Image (cartoon, rainbow, N blue to C red; front, side, top):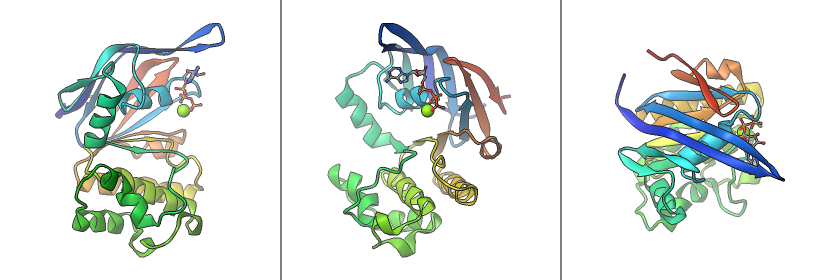
Length: 228
Ligand SMILES: Nc1ncnc2c1ncn2[C@@H]1O[C@H](COP(=O)(O)OP(=O)(O)OP(=O)(O)O)[C@@H](O)[C@H]1O
Ligand SMILES: [Mg+2]
């Protein structure tokens, strides 16, 4: 096994739905190896989004602990989680979440600017080039195709040089051709910069391109394909 970049121990999360409790995650242990590309699969409602949200610090676990790069989180305050996220984590959403009034380039660098960081123009240029959106630098989101929107969103997620990128069904709104292109470019660019990727997908063919596949069922990790 390679170097573990993320470790989860006994994490669980419940949701209240009316007067019913749903165990979205049940006492899960998990290890993510640095530099690999992971696909997370499982039936609808099996806990994939919940898992990604807690691993990416967007939500708190009810119990258990998570370490990224040796730094513990899980049940720390929302502001400390946000700090860790800005420093080490990139997030890609199914519905892109770009700012309509900003250009492609502005969308990509905005989080870093808000964070008071210096923009590494050379690195951003390389990322845009790898994701094949360089020529769209000055375009606005409404002028882009779905694949181009998602590649912009991936460039934004990569802008702060995250250690790990989480993507929840990033190709869910794309046709098959652009889905494969987005997946390939995400894979190639993250590999070049040594970034680990954890991606939820419903597409079995896309999952085959991952180094490892995590299978969820009813809030439990039932299998890891590609494990030693
Ligand atoms: N905010 C919430 N409030 C109440 N229940 C929730 C909430 N979010 C998720 N759940 C429940 O937790 C369980 C896991 O949901 P989750 O969204 O993680 O599944 P998923 O595997 O991502 O499903 P899908 O493939 O449909 O996106 C489901 O039973 C769901 O109904
Ligand atoms: Mg989901």
